Image (cartoon, rainbow, N blue to C red; front, side):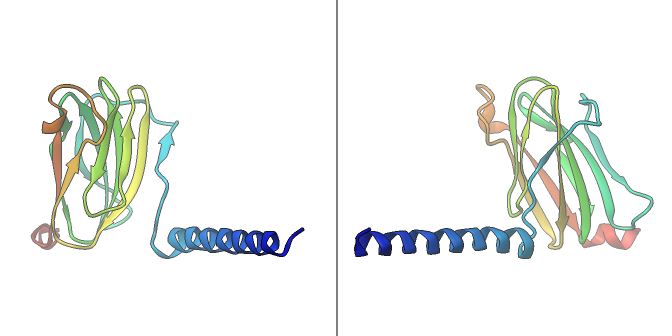
Length: 155
């Protein structure tokens, strides 16, 4: 093996280790979580506003249905610091579910339920966008998650 080939091989292995290390750091330090497909829940056709989980004070469960060309419910309101379990289903075609400012990026597939947990530490309005072309009015498909400290005071 030539000296240049050995150098290229060593550089390639070093870069591979650096990239692998970056993935491990992202997964452990930054809370990157892979969305999952839930197999023990049947797909639902009606959205459900945030349900407070009785076992934990700031834990909520939300069932969202993506349908042409809206999310049901269109607005979700939770207190600051809330940990939300998002369950997503589709009533018609494949849709996307992207929450700006978070790492939530789900696919809504008919006949399936996808899930991801997210914690909202900052107040504000987080837009929900469909990132999968779903028909002629796709560009109008949006929703929002409102995080408010005033809701926290009511509890």
